[in-house]
Length: 346
Image 1 (cartoon, rainbow, N blue to C red):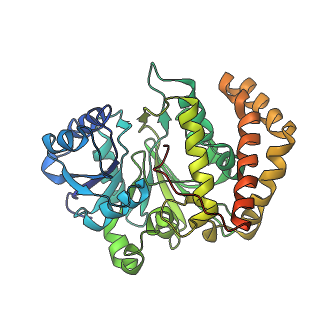
Image 2 (cartoon, rainbow, N blue to C red):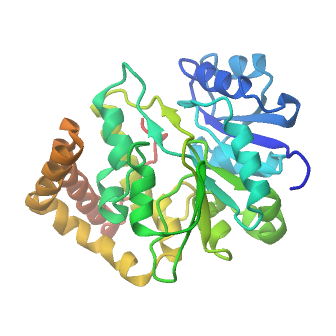
């Protein structure tokens, strides 16, 4: 990437009129040459003003007939013209107006690294404690499996404890992975960036499959065994809402990982093949862990004391809830009773 790269922002949406303008503003305020920025908004059938707002901001609006967000990202990858893809959800905002410059500079300086992580999530003022829980623990199953935090205060240190730093510069680091290392939990969102030129050259066949989205990180690090991370680049995360909405997201993840394992967006089921065997077996311990209540309660107390997060204390009940829901859907699967899949979070 010797020349100044074209950057494709890939943004899935569904009835996002209440928040998408904030996200788009953070892109349009970037110091990066806007003639080299394309914004692909892939919409799952919004009935509000989402599409109009996107069009008014000069975005290319594409349809996502399959509705689910990972399917939207696949449409974005296939239609992106850029050299670099930057994944940004409609509830995520670049805090720094140098964010795109930083990404372009990184890939130029580190041509052998093909995936770049943002520097973590920050909770904006006025959002609920659910935002704290998501930023720190994602969901009960994910935290049990990976044990890392996406909160910007802890993200760098949590990765540094697990992986070797191959490069350590003031504004970014490059982490390397050993053959027995668990790859970190990485999604195509949050301002994370992928080298599209490399993806097209080496994984053109995989790109045609919608499951390339949850597998994107593992594909792009499998040869180099490394990833970059911007230390000082924070993404503001406006997620939250109600506990009911968050519980519905947990339900959705359980349903797809139980009944729809071949569908894009089934994060764990489509990622685990890239992990060591012991990690793939670890998932069977979650039900025992969650149903005991004691172990997750002890973990929650630890994080409550260490990070001063009162919301950490809900970890025990949430683990129990998630474990019970997994058992319930395993019974339905055994009975060949497949529930209808709703839109994510609904």
